Amino acid sequence: MANLKEIRNRIASVVSTRQITAAMKMVAAAKLKRAQDAIVNFRPYAQKMQEIMVNVATAAGNEDDNVYAEDRDHRQALIVVITSNRGLCGAFNSNVIKEALRIAEDHYGELLSRKNVFFTPVGKKACDALKKRNLPMEDPILDIFDRLTYENAAAIAQQLMDAFTEGKYDSIDIVYNRFINAASQCVVTQHFLPLLPPEEKTPTARKKTITDYIYEPDKSFIIHELIPQNLRMLLYQALLDSVASEHGARMTSMHQATDNASQLISDLTLQYNKARQASITNELVEIVGGAEALNG
Image (cartoon, rainbow, N blue to C red):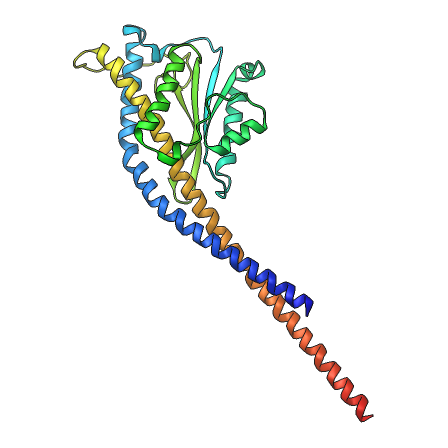
């Protein structure tokens, strides 16, 4: 009977776990709906404005002191790594961290060997992972998801722009999860600064035809006002994407955990019934044997 008691305790434990994972799945689904609406409604506007911004900045070249399109020799680079503050969301965080490390090694290998590649972790999971690897971190951001607004994202983007224009970094990239749907996310690397032509993603390729515009009030105003505004919007979009992806990944992960718990409960119940049947059979054999012994 001790074996039966152990199985009953395991079943009770798994049932409790299933209740927790099912509740977490429902919470993640509720949060996902709001986050998904936010990024789906925001993305078309942000993408079109990003396209216009890149064309405007590149067409201007070095005119009007366009510091945001300045092509420099890479001496120091910054990679912004956007993860979540909590776990239990599958490979959501680890995939971003792996991609950030790959970008550092493949694109900035020489700088990385000289410890001139810095990381800004956004989210506790990125901060913990980078700290564990003893990688150089700059200004960790751990509380942005508690109050994610455009104003707070804009303040972070402004810090990145100031660091670039002051020459602290010569290149800035953002690594995050892009939301596709509730069950799917993909890790992307968004080049933040300097601004590059849409046809090419390397600072050395600038010779393709670029769309130009009629400017009102003038080109200088557009360069100095529109571009910083759209860089702020670019970071805000990355944060919205990451939040929606996190909730989708957590909902999927908790759904799988709930299904696994249900399967385990079914297996344990079958095991319990077999053990109970064997126990009853042994008791009947002992009773019959005892009766025959008395009759004999």
